Length: 534
Ligand code: BG6
Image 1 (spheres, rainbow, N blue to C red):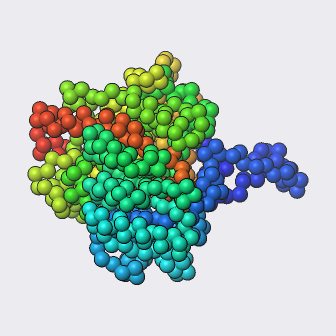
Image 2 (cartoon, rainbow, N blue to C red; image 1 turned 135 degrees about the vertical axis):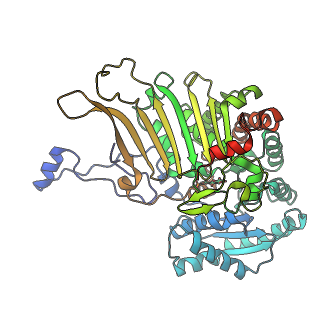
Image 3 (tube, rainbow, N blue to C red; image 1 turned 45 degrees about the horizontal axis):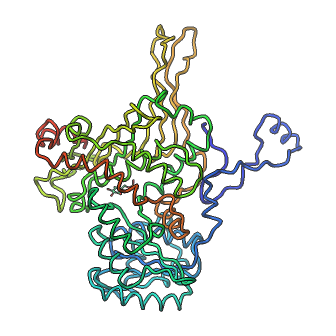
């Protein structure tokens, strides 16, 4: 498994038609090449997306002057445009509170592309064609006049640009504005899909709610205006190549599935570690903390992909049905169990790469007495036939010693220690799926050390994407925006899925909110220092 064959990347490589066996090699050397062989098709092949061009559409971006739009959404759209994955009849309408002339708005986006585009330099001609498709519309999200004016503006643009009445609304705003915007769109009739008049879809960023109650209320507001099939709740982790590969790895190979089971697996560890702090998002973090920023979404999604049963078909609902079953099999934790199963921490001041780094409480827009967690570790169980009794250790945090997102499947020790006389006992088998950086898959197994004795050591078989495929992966936002434009919701969170994930996380938040279980056993300061990683 040190090299992978075939291609699962967007810039499709030609099938590997080189000699693959010793006989083929001999024939090739003798100038008698056998007919070329086609690479086996990948069941989740991106071709599904690449072979289909999205319909003409207007991309209506709420929060267009914000960080997310500039860093992620617009660079992803630009990349899709420059690789010919968007139709000619495509236009972007940015919406924000600040006043901008179209030209000034375009100039800001152009500057952001220089800073955040995955591919540089920006080709002038490509930008020109892309930039002239961008316009700006000013308005206050709480003011119904915005939506009424927008309705007329979008009709006008439809006529000018030939976008056939198709609209993707993208909410890249503060979460507190989601319900307001959805209500405004509904009152202006901007959700209506007239017969033959184009589709309407809405992408909603995370976090979706603050707890179970607010997620249910938000789903209700969304449901008053849009049908579930029109709604795309985004968790960008699901768009990452290596996360998507979990499904291929599990269900595209025959050899792992039988051992993906409590009989063979001792425990599973899912880690999302970041070396960065909260950067400029102090006020967001004060509201969210690691439990809302990572646990309810990224970590629970990774857990669901690892633990789910194989879906019968590869369509959005079959896939999401299986993920929801996993979340349903997770019993909400009793308050008394929270202290034993969940740990939280906060980073303190320290040093990063030889430079002093502020602690969380010293970050801008953070309360100097804040008790918000920037680290969380949880031991959770999936009570179903496959996983009963297997702990899933989930952890995530900021300002940890290195950036690493990884899923480790730790297998059980062999039942009988046959090589106990050996100098070093081998460790149990481990399968590590490295999501980022250094994307790849590692399998640890025992091997005999060459020599006259019977020394046994653990060795690694390591597959890395970089060396196997030698192509850049698309950014998660490129994948997800394209999917939303194509109407493929497989990699988006369904209403019941978001609520079920909150059912697991909310009891933890509630237990923390009660005085008795705050900060487990140690006082905040001692705990903060012990968790500090810098
Ligand atoms: C976001 C979180 O969802 O994911 C951030 O809000 C986090 O706090 C980010 O830094 C990590 O994303 P990535 O793609 O860099 O792993």
